[in-house]
Amino acid sequence: MPSLSIGGSTQQFTCFTGEIDCIPVAWRCDGFTECEDHSDEKNCPVCSDSQFQCESGQCIDSIFRCNGEANCQDNSDEKNCEGEKPFRCDECNFASTTQSHLTRHKRVHTGEKPYRCPWCDYRCSGVY
Image (cartoon, rainbow, N blue to C red; front, side, top):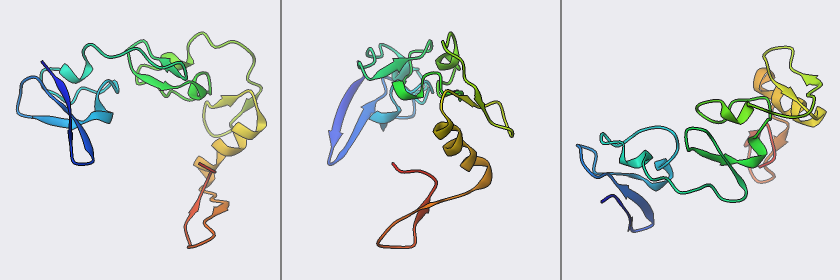
């Protein structure tokens, strides 16, 4: 039976059969099959209260549900979304319920990186 094992500080999932023995535990139930026998995508746990479960079984953070971008591999996070999304991107199909989400999204197209690390030259497009 497949198992989770901890080797040092790295958690790994052990595939049941096949040439690949172990994969990072973060790859288990992510909607992409890494194990030849598909054991990494079988018997997946139910998503937590702060997550949305995609039709494929994949779990994503709930904040990505109905944000105008496909975060589920099967695009199910953008199905049956309620409410109007009046803020639309001129470059692609992205739509949002808030101007701030649209502003942050547009940085994908412009390459703008307004946030700077106070200790080095690193810059990024959003606060994480």
